[in-house]
Length: 245
Image (tube, rainbow, N blue to C red; front, top):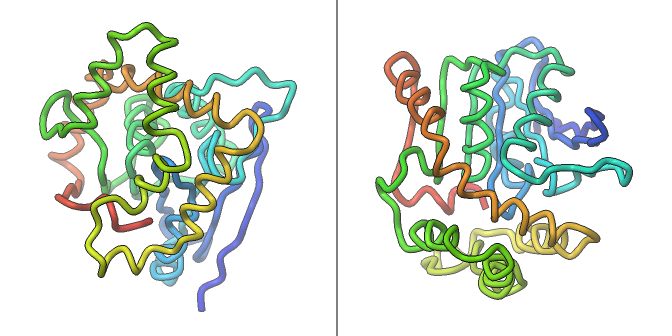
């Protein structure tokens, strides 16, 4: 069985926990997780692919076991998280050959691509919005509508409808056929909700969700993704939301 290593690296006052698997000399694959999960969602993928790839899966700031030092005034925004992951990649001195971008990790990854923080030969993009309005469903239109609310009202609505125990449980289990729901490790929900219950995490999640409008405006990143598609392998699919819970 493949060995998964649990590593820590401090960059600019943030202690990034990341899972690593596979031979260091092999091509490196970066795995960026979504909300409300962590690198825990990639545990099976790390095992399955580590015979041929060097896999790196960080917990993004605000998620999992990554911690921000108390003296650090951290910006829980998509730009802020991208800054941290860019510094983390630089510190590890790795060349990213491929990237798997899921959900919120997609928006972080888009920023890293535009900045040139990595130039992968292959991309897999799952359950993230690459174009404003295209393929949107109810939740995304709701996010756009929330941008017109006063910030205090938007935060209160997020806390009452999404960032609470019932809302996080829905993120993992809602509308799933029994056969799929039975395959979801309940530890994934417990880890996600448990993190939000830790000191300061709720406000961090509210800050990050309120910043979602920046993704809708970030069209330059999506143009860059389109350019990459002509040269590199990009995979997007329907009903991909439940693959790595």
